[in-house]
Structure formats: structure tokens, C-alpha cells
Image 1 (cartoon, rainbow, N blue to C red):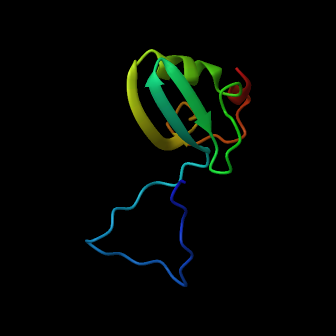
Image 2 (cartoon, rainbow, N blue to C red):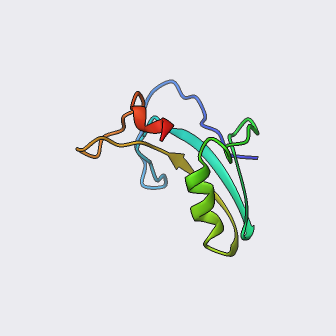
Image 3 (cartoon, helix red, strand yellow):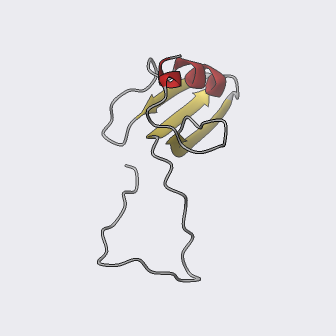
Length: 89
């Protein structure tokens, strides 16, 4: 099961925490075993067909791993572009 965010009343900063950028993409968990890949959402919806190029690239790694990350389209300035038509390419 993927870790989920925890709601808090206000923002905080602490040297004990590592913070990440909010990219506005798709959270994806990828299980790789050899050249077999299973990509899915945190709600267990398959992403294999939707992001076929990424699944194919991961299968080429030929490793055993679980990757938890975010699939993001960025614009020419490196900023997230959730409305991009490139999601469909």
C-alpha cells in the first residue's frame, strides 16, 4: 500500500523531515520483476495501457524493484503542465 499524505492544521518546517515538490501529475507505483511491469494508481487502477511507453521503458531495466513516484508532463520551462495535450501521446 502506498503512503498517503497526512492533513495538518498549518505548514511546518523541521530538519527531521524531507519535503518534495507538488508536481500535479499521476501518483504511480510500479512493480518490476525482470521484464514484467505492473504500474498502478494508489487506488489500484492499472496504468500499464495509459502510460505504455513508460511501462515499456521500465521493463527494459530487467530488475526486481518497486518504484513509487509521480508521472508528470512539464512545459518548456520545466513547470508542471497538467492540462497538456502531451498526456495523450
